[in-house]
Length: 439
Ligand code: XUL
Ligand code: CO
Image (tube, rainbow, N blue to C red; front, side, top):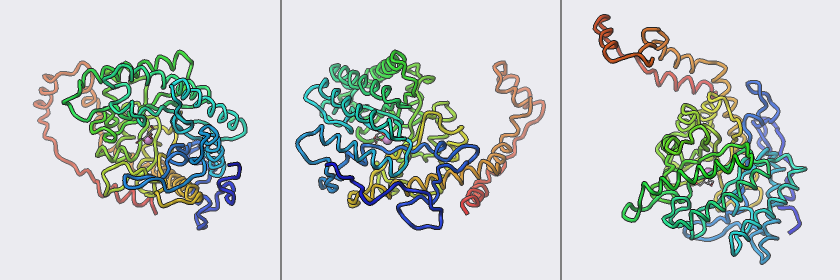
């Protein structure tokens, strides 16, 4: 396969919101300066290797629909090289600054771990060559510790110590490859770290295994001089019934237990947030409040389905509320906006892949502009500041100081005859204010 996969599509450009050309950007104007920073540097878009190049379009009722040429043939490494060509072709068309991958997305699994690791290195060498001339860099790498049947009962949290060891050796390789490729982060998504039934599970032991595994990864990061961020990606269900990395709050608790709350941050996925019963912006704001906001996996779920549908985002208002929280958190440092999203299985044309990403990049860009308006106008922040203004009064602030006591507070309540009066939370007024920025 030497021919281009997208022969009739050239690099997309910004044509403005009036144009209806699906193979162009209408809002994503990468050099436009928003709040003092170029759009490209704010959004830091990434393409996810697994959905766009590795997933064949199957569902529980039927197999592959896409029939990608690089998925058919006998020489698996040659197919992986062809896949890498197509990947960089798409990165170039979309003009994206980043991509992300699992080891098993990019190269075939061998008969032994040594062979698998060598395959990953062989394709990483090809990436390194391509990255000398491509603008696209690596946002993050990660290990697939969930597809092979050896991981059916977990990786780090497996009852079998051999699986723990195998997983550690696999992560060592991908972490090193990510470092060598200049990756800005390394991601650990829980995969099958969780359980199906307590009847066969020693929960405390599994949590201890997980804590040690995370520390092993962080220790190795420092040993090899990897300056990127280690990110955990929370998800509440799927594949196991009870995933240990349920949501941001749960991950923070696990990090504190492992002594890693200053070392590890989170990669928050929109569809994972909603599966946990939260909004995407809640998870971002929670991570920011806890000091562990890192990066996002951008997508959306289906409001009627209870699983991870990984659709490209289309809702500007929802995305604007998420972007607002990212801006309030100070924006990304090493993080970015990774499209952990796949085209629907009927979208079999190469151009569907391009259009899906371009439209989603536009949704995010439009959302960024709206969020920047919210920040610049300041009315939302002012309403919050006013709501908490009482805490600026010294006598009130003193209640939170280390030397305060219940006796002193009770004495003050009695002396001042305090009788708190409820005040409106003004939710609808604030929602209407948000609506005004969407005009
Ligand atoms: C699974 C998921 C993963 C992680 C990386 O739901 O989101 O693709 O992003 O392992
Ligand atoms: Co994800």
